[in-house]
Image (cartoon, rainbow, N blue to C red; front, side):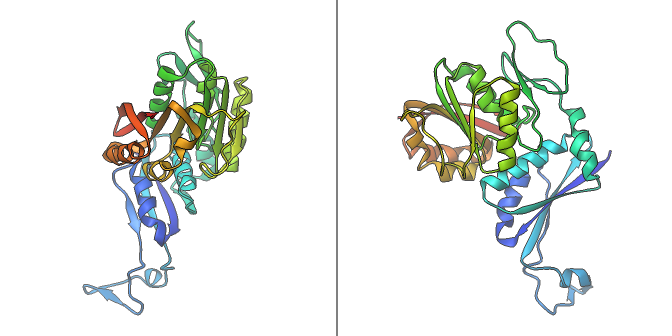
Length: 306
């Protein structure tokens, strides 16, 4: 089996959070951190220290995971990019053992039509698919943005959306990535849909995907909730945030300001071990937990604003 090393280099102060993001994808991580290595030290427990380590920049560190060849490495990269942007962390992503030009296109062979709900089918723009009568087709080209429907967090959000979006709803997607959740909401009957992302590349991809799906959706750049738009003074009926536990907890004080009474909040990007922390933060800020879906160690949770 062939493996590719996926490495993120960051400021040492952000290493713990980067490791947390990487461990969401693979249990085994490799960390390089020489910040505690004393200047002038030549040996550790009698073993000589490599000169390159002694001269290494102590202000930076890295975390790596190893991705098997049958996995979609682009989905991993997009996920990491999204989580780094959400956390305002600057990180350099490298793929070691795989040529950049190769992975930038080779991942497409792993991306096939995927049913993400009872009737929702995500179809790559380059694939042919014969829809069933009840199918709602989402035509996607994610580019370098996160959200193809193959990751558990996206599927879980799509399933909760399918059960809860009503005709005429106003919907907001925070950290919208490829725009997939906003497009799903629009095709399920939401009247006004908007999505925001901190990454300009993601916003451009979202707009292209909305046009591809004949959906009128307002996508724009925003650092989480800082520039969220309210149309006609009407609060949102449903808000999605497929981000990461720490960011959801950080937003818990403010996100209710954009949701009407009895409106719904769907949060995901949460590993099950941190579900209770997210629950506590949102319940303490005026929400009631209604439901949750879990798959392969990930969860998506549905809350109602009190």
